[in-house]
Image 1 (tube, rainbow, N blue to C red):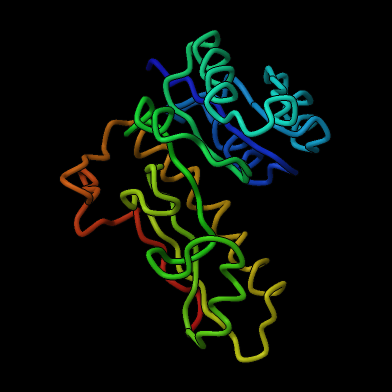
Image 2: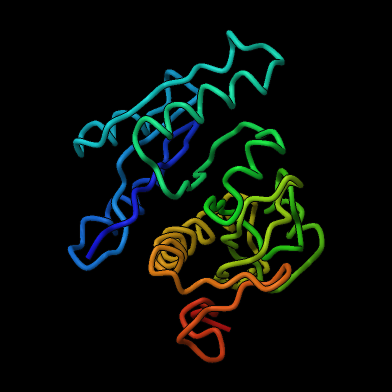
Length: 218
């Protein structure tokens, strides 16, 4: 089996990156993490990647100022150097330019801590609690030029409890993220994700079995 070559982009601790690395250690997993890139020199996730013998690259965004095109050009060059085929954003706190996104269209995933299209953007947990929803969760989607708006690959739902704070809800959602991101990458690497319009169809499953994780409790 030829494994897909994957780069993970991080800005901080990279806990979702760690879950992808752990999944990729399985011999049957269809992807390998060949590169971890950060825009933050102090990102703790870089040390985690290095400890697992994964090549790392640091592209500090600060010297680029507001020149996002130049930053994205440097990022693209590093991805090309490592012959990357798929990209996973894992807490990467940079807005990518539309041109970069379009170059990687259908090959770049992101994870968001809410059930999109509900609660996009920052403070998703605070938004969920303010809205009084009973279920929240995580979404893996293709990256589109508009933030948190790409086609949805997989989702995981978790219950929202009456006594939840943003922190307790975040911890529960993070567990779901660590489960669903490796699953979504597996589906994409296996070629089972088919884009039809703005919708993702998962080949070989019905109805979307494996691409939806439901709450463990009512």
